[in-house]
Amino acid sequence: MQKKAHRHISPILPIIDKKKGRLEEMKHLNLPDRMFFHWCQQQYALNRGVYNTIDNWLHEYGIIDIQYRRINLLAFLEYASAPEQTSGQSRAIKFGKGGLTTKLQEFMAM
Image 1: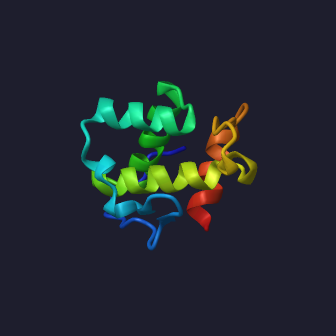
Image 2 (image 1 turned 135 degrees about the horizontal axis):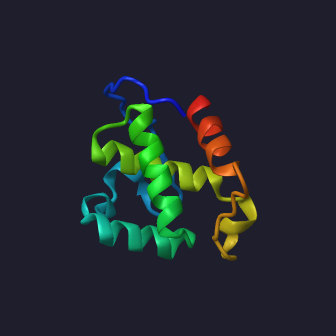
Image 3 (image 1 turned 60 degrees about the vertical axis):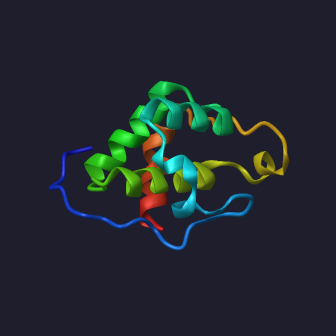
């Protein structure tokens, strides 16, 4: 992806996590980076590389504000989760080769 000019982009609203309420109201958004990553890792079985790639991609897309980026990161992870994963089964998200970028592009085009 080519680097775009930075611009202020608000989160996609309203974003609602059915179990936790509105994402922008979550206490997890204000955790230090390492703790936020570990929370995401527990919820979605992400590895650090995938987390960093998503965070970097959103930043390059123009979402500079960390809280907005985290809201969109969580919204993306909910979007990328298969419906069968949200019914109490394993929530590990699999993207495959090139699948992460494609899924991010689909998400931002919504």
